[in-house]
Image (cartoon, rainbow over the protein chains, first blue to last red):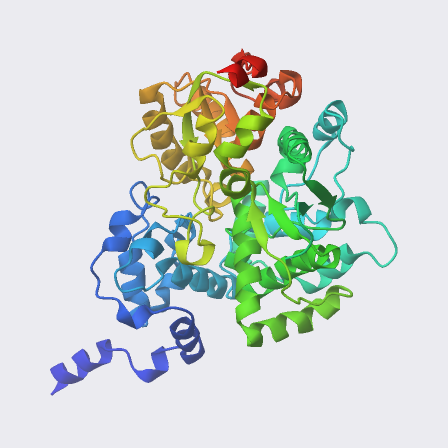
Length: 187
Length: 306
């Protein structure tokens, strides 16, 4: 009797699933059609050189294994769309990985470098801001020193940039463990 | 659909803030070809599909819709020169035109950013598609004053053609649009192993894990080096950045000795249309600073006689 009980505990129950998450993924992709053929992994241009195994990620999602949300590998996809193009079951693995990343971000699983990029967008309107050398280069080429983008208008009255900073891409605060690591590195 | 022969010129981030020579070249060719380019004042980052879409897909759509609204006000189609910007703007534009529920939600949030409302009245174009299909190799012949005799390693990048069902330009497995166009400029595309693979920069990987990005890139460079092209030809400033900084990184850290000039399609087209090499701006780039295009002037009179 006890053996049976032990075994049954290993199976996932309804409580282990995050229903909203799966509903969302189901709505935005075709994940239940996956037959684990491996075309995605075979086509993966990142996975050839990194630990990213697309097929295994898809399988984990289907089985409700939420450890994928902490898996650093989901951030190694270059979104080249090779798997998306070639998947015979139209699972759209790139979209699945995008959903996983969105969800991971909500949980605070986001790298410091990516936080920095969000910071650039909020403060300058650009993911890659301008610098003095480029301003000079632009002038040498006969272009305006500043391109007519948001950054040029950042200080105007009622500037859109302040609204973008306030309303867009809110990230959860840095987790305590990460803060500790950062402080140690700082020393 | 907007006015004919006029585009709202979407700059993005890397072109104006790292490679303004591509911006210069694009303005030069489009104006010479009889197009008018309008400034998109207050445009932001597209926002980049690799990073910002990964963090919050909804906000990514809202920020993209804001940029689309700026062009809708000008009542013209958008022209991009970057696969990333094209990817974001084309995809969001198409999605919001088709999906009423998302359009309403996006418009709701857009109100927080100012007087914006996405209407879905314009299209988004990429310079490679405008040159390749609208101007065409047949049209550029009349506009160029010289041809370069060069062999180029053509890099398509990922988001110009893929996902094919959204982009609807041509097959991503064996595209020919760039090859056919540059042949008119006297540039021969040399085939190399795994030509259509990713440069390794996209998807936020370059920021997330520089080493992984360089590992993917080093294989790409090895395959390019095997065929010894005169230069690498790309259609995306982010790939451009990866090819530039990547070669530099491999030279400094992995004992390589690469010096392949990296040239955007706009730059080579501008040169053939008569722009001075000085403005092509290789002197500002990391690789192939001493490269001289050379080539032959076309003597129009003689050609007509034949």
